[in-house]
Image (cartoon, rainbow over all chains, first blue to last red; front, side, top):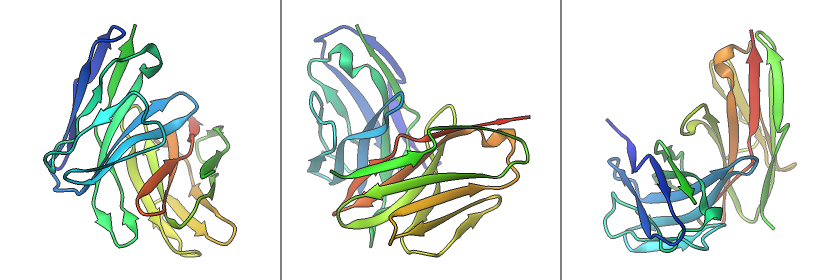
Length: 115
Length: 110
């Protein structure tokens, strides 16, 4: 089954404790992206990647890191989480079409709470 | 600044009504506009629009893009309670940038 998986689905942590949220897709998509979703703000892009070893900042990259060592995996790293990073996080992947990024397939989401 | 604005932010209708959701945008080097539906989980893809005036249709849902006036509409006819969701508009621009609007929360009452 074609899918995007994220782990963990729920995480409660404390300020400053490094964490990683994993993301994996089995569709051989070139494009992968991370978003955070907060009430009233829609989805805001954190980082995206066009292919292996190619990553770019989105609209809200501060406090986050990513890596793309393999095509299928795109982990999100919070080196020193803070309470303002409490949010619902989505990973997504897509083919790259002639007119840019196509329809994105989203993972199930990770609800992160930082106390 | 690049932006995507959806309206209304919230809408309550009764089953059988027809609704129109709006998405306007101001971005550099527009490439595509996409609509997604989000229920209590991850967004799912509805339509991708790249050309003006060509309607995309799927059942009771349809969408059209106006690249001159910089907006798109999503129509839902004969609404059902299962249409209750947040509808998200996203615009692809420049090389591969993607920006989402804040979404429209649609509630369909029996």
